[in-house]
Length: 418
Image (cartoon, rainbow, N blue to C red; front, side, top):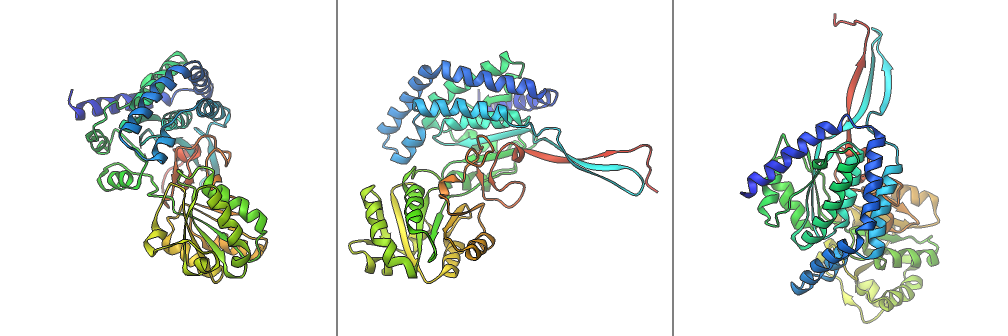
């Protein structure tokens, strides 16, 4: 079968399933999600075996440490996948929710109701847990999902999808509501994003190159973020002990993620007190530091940071450090070099904290908290399908509500337009 024909057939099956999902009640969807969680744990050894084949292949190909980390499924991550399914099952169902109603002078009632988007295409690399997260959220929000994972995770994804489809079918959910394009040729992506009328929304998750390719070629609406160039600004009124813990967590806890800190900005009045110990802590954790001129004056032996470095999403234990005159310069830096993903300030000054919240234009802005907390699960949304930096429809972590749209509803008793 030609690639285009295969992709079109899977999309048509997903479209048919999306229409049947409209009639399913919350209890049916929740039952399917809970069964999926049970089956994921029951089949963990088979899933790990399939994943090990992918990991070995990735190592043989010389893929990056960050990608291999995202690819690897440990017992803990499999348990987290099952936990995410259960958490989404426990969340309120947004489908059919009437947000508000108002009465017009002619007596008719007008309102908005949340409804599914339809078929959501997920294009992703490396992370097989995305298969579970995307399925759980799309299904609970009443959408069919058309999955296209990366070639590096093909065995893992096939094993997981088989489990999810079986659980769905046994629970009364059409199994084609979970469709997987099991073709590793990238032509499948280009065919998928042309399916206007069959696919209603595309969400790419992966490297900047993948996301730009999808965005520039898609005939279907795309929700995206290109990269996560995240900052922590340590203000002159910061609790420096708190700042050290936040900065270390933001960079080191899991550096291969889009919400990890890539540049540390330090207010000039506290730089000499803060940086020597902070940089030593980073070094102790294997972080390679690139410093501005002022930083290198305070701490010797550092690599010089170049301007182009400030645009980089390292996804690794590499960090830019810059000393700024004040918060205004920090905000200017974030505005120029940031990607609108996640930025944080550490300060005990309420006025400056509020100014930072107002003036930093990112999908999530944090006060006295690690950038690593910008996550659907951490925000209480359940598993997220991604973090959007777009400014239409959804921004920030995309949970259940973000996977629905609203339509107007009207309740009348015979009103006519005069």
